[in-house]
Length: 128
View 1 (cartoon, one colour):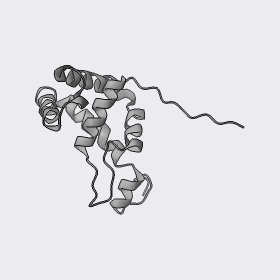
View 2 (cartoon, one colour):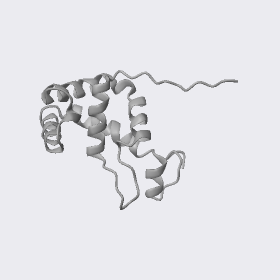
View 3 (cartoon, one colour):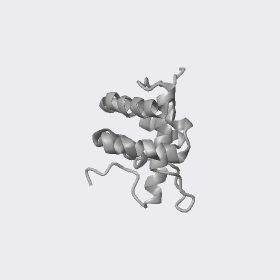
């Protein structure tokens, strides 16, 4: 029996995915000290994109705004320019900025490598 990889449709354009990946890596960078990947890690980022769900319209709105302010793709700017635009988003649209953080962090902290680094059991927090 042949199995096929599941393709998760995403409302994000390739440019928006690049911008979201840059944001994720800036929010939670990799750490050699703690041996954990950043939120822009391939597996974690795939989980982020696949998990947008009902938040997708607002995430696409935030990314479109950031890309518009960047004059192209946020990911093409240097780190200082990216930080300035993300601060602008926090100042002008704190709800959208918070949603971006929540989407990234929710997926980051369910990655097995991250959970192991925190000495946490690899299981859902409930029912225990």
